[in-house]
Image (cartoon, rainbow, N blue to C red; front, side, top):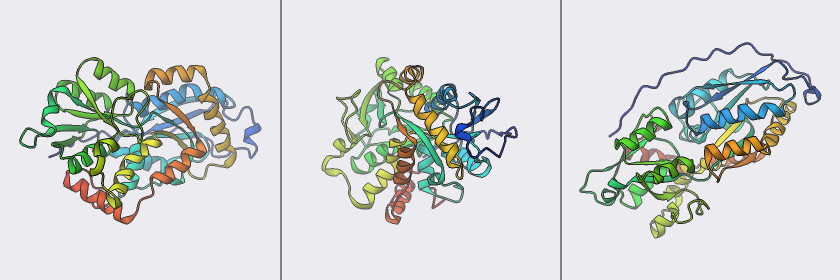
Length: 351
């Protein structure tokens, strides 16, 4: 059973921006002077991706020549496809339009399908904010039903049914016998959290440790498992999903498919420039991102937004990770399609 809602499409009209630049732009102290950088955000307002974009937009311009203004534009929908398709089609490679992407953008690409008209491997990665693996929680009043197939199913709630942590629930149902059903179509993190607090859904996940701690502090949920290969230092008593699987952990295409779905959390909230952006521009933007990561104001705000486990990775490493987590064999791709069909989740390639 599933629930879908029609998500509003945000129409975006860009102000004309320069399409030419000096070949020695890194030496031009006024390259960005009086200009505005548009950051397209592949999610709705209020979630982790939106917070990352606004944090970057607030601090990173300090380290760009000319100290440009920034404007963040949310283009939520279809697991990041709306924003990514627009970015790949319309963004000019001049350093004035960037994309704040997230794991769903990569998962959507891996799923495939005719509606995916972008290739994140071609982007020029500038860096990423990584918050650690996803943490899966369940309402206290639902846990007794999790292993009881004769009881009412535990309801998993998600925005679009493809978020990386949902992989734990699907493999949990298939290999651990969890009693679940998935509902997707919520319009953002805040709406999903409200549904959890109201009891509309019973299970939810996030990489944002602060949000999870708030739920635990309120006595609403217990933490079930976490997605990292090793336990996070901020949740040392919570078993990893691999630990929960134990000797029931699958191998071959089934496990490759799981890693393809869950793996993009190693990239998390990534910032990119369009394909074809000149090397001089990419270098300038990467240097600004790296300098931003050392900024005390940035570090303080990141800790407030994301908790203590966040870290920053470089543009070069981000690009390599994007290529790594979006590589999948045909056998694993087919397994993904079949297991999503089984649990009535979006199929991608087979749709």
